[in-house]
Image 1 (cartoon, rainbow, N blue to C red):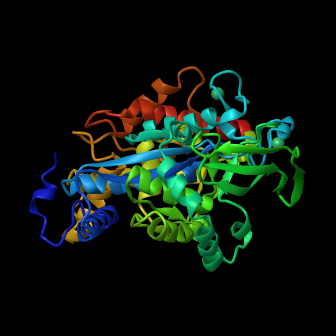
Image 2: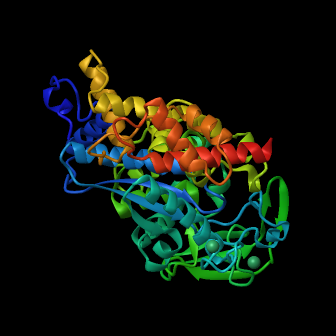
Image 3: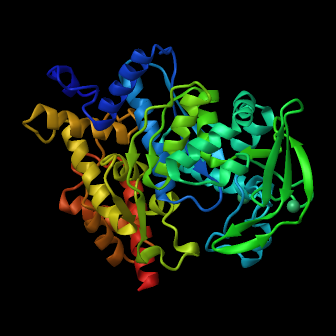
Length: 451
Ligand SMILES: [Zn+2]
Ligand SMILES: [Zn+2]
């Protein structure tokens, strides 16, 4: 460990980053509320209806970073990674065959894996891409599948309370966002027993003794177009895992059932969070978690991947050209502000991570102790608080790609290594050089192909 942290003046919280401040605030809030501090959970939903892009990974990593901040403060914490795999498919993701349209409205956990038989469902395939990225980035989490959570009855107490108070739920939704739909409809979507779709059903009556809802498979709107339901009239036990709560109430149910204390969210679901906060407090009697709202991630893709399937800037694309820690840096360096990302961000973030490493190992002096702690702390968060013992070799990314571009075919790695030795870059070792050569070769290879 570097000695940097031991001489910090007292006003620096934790490692000096935004996450440390947020974690301290969170712990103080929990103490004020009189809740147990034994385990402080944060949560992130994982979309399972399409290819996860960097923004989806960012949602989960932000909530993980606050969980790390809680640990720095000396408390136990845990990130719940909750896959929204009971969701119905609303559109066919770009890059996938059009004939998937026949699965519109079906829970993504009931749709066959479109990529082959590698996973048990569409939802499981998409979720696994995001979990792989979280693993590569070094995040630790407890995984929950929405479909399984409903099957296992984890939300049953909450579902009963919401159904019994459905009228009040409808009023709260109307008061907060003006939507009148739930003055009539129950906030629960049964899976249609006849056609298997979930978003086509309309639940209109609750039978409290049997905890059943009556529903009609009426149809659903998909991107301004009406998708006809099958017309089936049925009833379903809301505790049987054969449906899901509406988004207007599901967060609230999850927060209470899983005892969630913090959840950051993107601006696009601000209305939904506001409604859920009130429902959580007023109907479920649970003080909702602390929130922080952040700007949505704008996926600019970039010309390198513009021809790939769906043009989605995925974490897997980043890992071809840059390290997981450089991706963590992109996500962690600004929590709240607007962020946009494209592959062109990879070289500067690789270089910036090297700069942070220099600060952390004391190779570059930063006078202001607060600024020093912040930069050094950010570096530690990029390494998920498990930074290496020694620094890696530092070579500007564009030098690496230039060398990769002119290297003779078949002997690229040897050529790059020799040049770097000549230039004096390897005088103090070559830790991490193999990875850097691979990133540079991938980068130059793709540039050549797309030129
Ligand atoms: Zn698969
Ligand atoms: Zn139906």
